Image (cartoon, rainbow, N blue to C red; front, side, top):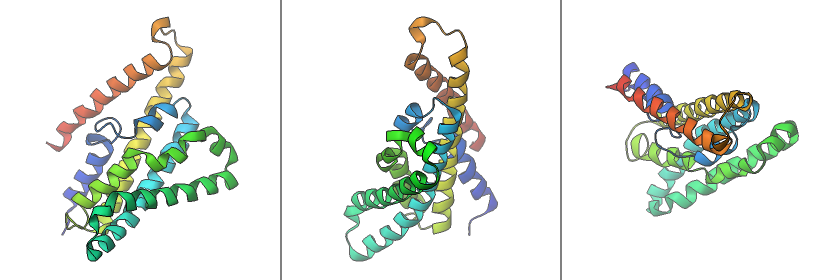
Length: 199
């Protein structure tokens, strides 16, 4: 039985304490590449959250099948195939219904397939909440969604700061990517400090 305290720990842990981008440094490529504007960052964050949530369900089920067949060593390959199929589905949907967002995300949308944060969530869910950990599919799904929301929070914060820095007087040597890296580093230190929330 999972208590409400456990759910709170999973929620706070996934969004703030164990933030995949700022604390575990997974998914840095889209985090830095798509965070120039808030609207594209929002689109990428929502796409990653969606893929993480749906991928966690499918990978949990695929892992059950792999264990039943005795071929769990194919886990990583199977998970990448599941994630690639989901990203392809999102890409086709965005191209048809939101062409402006599709163009704004550019090459970073297909890169969700190889986004190590998405794969990391799927694998860690299996170890912590899935077949190995013995907890439920629901716990795995919620951890993935909250992890995606943590990614969304991080990318939106960085995008907002970067938009603000575009109009501020930043010293010439720090303009562009250097100040972005410094900003991400400071954000990372702030998120690591959230570790005290869970004791």
